[in-house]
Image (cartoon, rainbow, N blue to C red; front, side, top):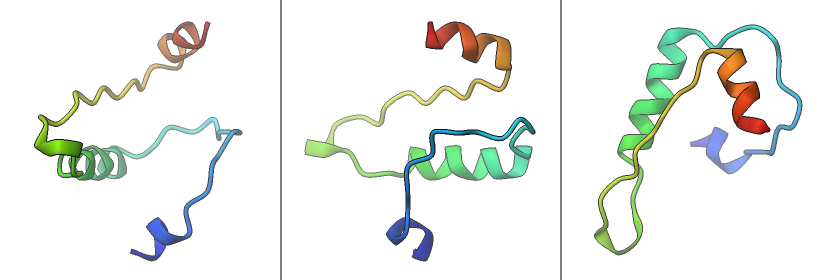
Length: 58
């Protein structure tokens, strides 16, 4: 809970990939996040290939 209360925006990212266990935990948490008006949860897509991520930015 302390991480949520002290969150911050990050605009510079490290080059090393996120460990699979950490990515799985974040994605699982996202599926349980509440939605407004009881709507269906959004689709979450994790892009781990830096080449694809770079193309999406453009």
